[in-house]
Length: 248
Image (cartoon, rainbow, N blue to C red; front, top):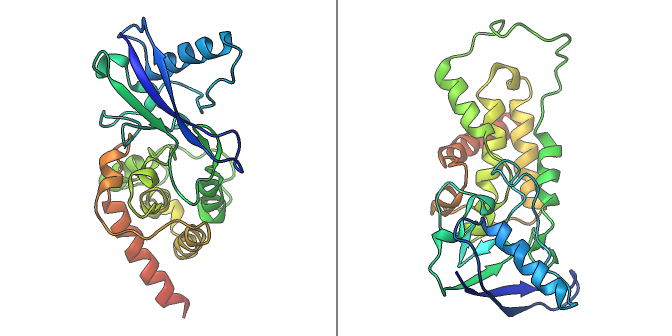
């Protein structure tokens, strides 16, 4: 297979970026998208040029590092999939593929396809934890939890913090990410002690980081590689209003 790749190149966070075209040939249809990028970089290096910088780590759809905007969609055309789980057989031979970094004020471009997602870390540091002393490991059945609540908490905790929700949102809102991190504790007994303080701190930090507001278009859920539900946003909003009233 052969492709024309239109890739965003930007030397650093101060430089002006631009789209650069690359031709690549003899690509195996069973290669992952990141393997194709490795082949491209090998080709570029052999020419004595600077390879394309992109984030990657586990390459198993677990870490969320492989954040690319491919043909106008976060992580590419497949649903419930990260970039590393995308294969070249999902494209047409001879196709032109546009590859850009995630775009958001709170995700400044560091180099080429790499953005700084430290804003997510700041939000989690603001309240994405519980501070109760657990002591020694408790027996698994020591704290009875309703199965429906346990399942919803598990689904919320599946968020890998990749930022696809932000990249997909027309307002670059982080509401899906924040609501998932709020919900994974709000649904469990261990998270009740600091429930009000947590949601206030995390939502306020989200605004400080410069993310936009949610307008409930559902684009975030549609592009989320883990299928995080926007019902978490409704829960976060209810908790925030309740906590804000209680704090007065």
